[in-house]
Picture 1 (cartoon, rainbow, N blue to C red):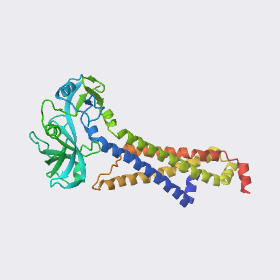
Picture 2: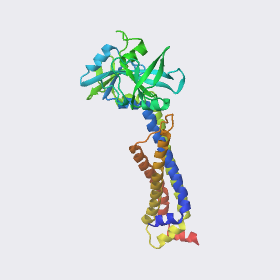
Picture 3: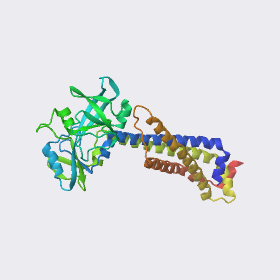
Picture 4: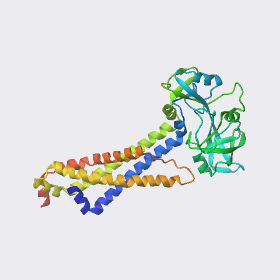
Length: 370
C-alpha cells in the first residue's frame, strides 16, 4: 500500500504522531482502569455476595449505614414469595489499630456480621473459617492484610464507639472492599454485641438481608425495600458521581484523540496536495487516495493500541506491589472496548483529511506545483 510506504520513508514524522496516539490511548486506558478500580473499592464485596437481591429497611433510602432490621423484619424477608434462601447481614464501620494500640496505614474497615452456614458466609482462602463461639475471631480480606502488614494468626484491635476490643485473625478471604473500606467478617452475634451492646429483643438483628430466588427485586414486603445487587451497588454513596466523572474523562480522552489525529493528518494532507494532484492526474481515483489516508491512520492507531495496552497492564501490576492499595484495575473487556473505541475515534478524526484529499482538483494542484 502506498500509505504504508510513505510511513516507512518518513519514519520520524509518523513515529512522533504514533507516540502521541500511544500516549492518548494509554491515558484513556488508565482513566478506564481507575473507574474499574474505584468501582471495586466501592463495593466488590457486595457484588461477590451469593445473593440475587438485597432487602433494606424501607426508610433507609437503600443505605446500608442507615438500614436497621428487627427480627420480625428478617422473618418477613424470608417469607417474600420466591425466596429460596435468605441470610441476615450486619454492617458496622470500625477503626483499626495494631494489637499494641498503635496506628496503622489502614485507618478503618467494614465489619460485616454473618451467620455460619448461610449464603452470607465468605469463602476462606487460607487459615480456617469461624466456628460457633468465636466471639473474638475475625476473617480479614487479603487487601486489608496486605495494606496493614498483617497475617493469619495475628491480632488486631477494632475500635468502635467508645469501646475497643482485640480480635484474632483466623482466616483470609478475598471478598474485596465495601464502602471504600477493606472488609472484616465476624459472627453476627459479635456484630450485634459491638454495635448495640448485646442481642436483646428490641435490638436490630441485621442491617440487610441477602436473598436468593428469581424475580425478587421490587417485591413488596412490610417495612422492606427489595432491590437487585446491581441497584444496591449503584446506590452506594458516591458511586454514581464517581462513575459519571470517569466516563466524562474517558469521553474527553476519545475526543482529544480524534481531534489530535484529525489535525495532524489534515496538515499532512494539505502539505501533500501537489503530490495528490499528480496521483490523480496519472489515474488514481479519489477513493484510492482517501484509502491511503485511512490505512495510515489505522496503522498508527493499531500501533498505539498494541503499545499502550501492555504498558497499562504493566503499570497496573507494578502498582499492585505497593503496600497501599491503588484503585486501578483492568478487565479483558475494558482493554477490548477501549482499544476498539480508540481505533474508531482515530478513523473518525481522519475523515476530514480524507475529504480534503477527495476534493483535490489535479489541475489546480499541478498549477500550485509550478
